[in-house]
Image 1 (tube, rainbow, N blue to C red):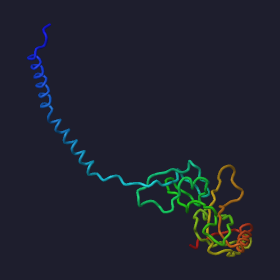
Image 2 (image 1 turned 120 degrees about the vertical axis):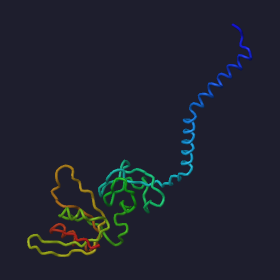
Image 3 (image 1 turned 90 degrees about the horizontal axis):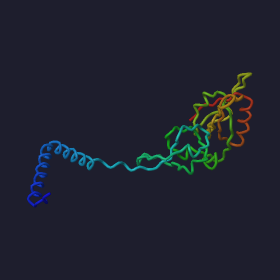
Image 4 (image 1 turned 60 degrees about the vertical axis):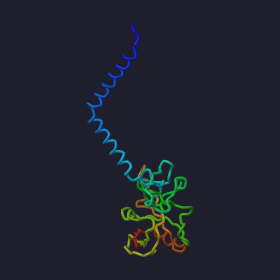
Length: 217
């Protein structure tokens, strides 16, 4: 077989060049369209605003009832846009092991106001904490931690009603355990703050009479 001469190589190169040129020209509209699309996409990316910076925030990973002890699986960290983060948010290390002061919804930021601090009475100087049972569970469900209530005690035999405390703060709403058999004690347990002197009167009324809580503020 004869060796390829320079003339043959040039001819082959010319054929390849001609073939490629015809292929490009035949698809020039498609290539132009692709170039335009690429240019538009690059322009849009260049003009698009940068994503807003976020701040890590500890939130509830599931619905948590009041009085729950926060476990590691109950919290997660999500990014909140700057300027939308609530004040006094707690990190996961602080939240785990503490008790919720009220119900938390999934995704709700966990702030220090939502957790029982080092002392249940932190922020209530001069008061003692006393648990009382409100027989009307529906009425007790309206209460929130931080509410101020007046306590009324009614003698169910005579119907006589006595005011046993005014402007009493609700400082905790323990989780009601509904598992197993129904508790013999009806109603809802709440924790209020009173003076030492008033606590005896409130405890006696809670044990012997029907308590009603009216929200004062």
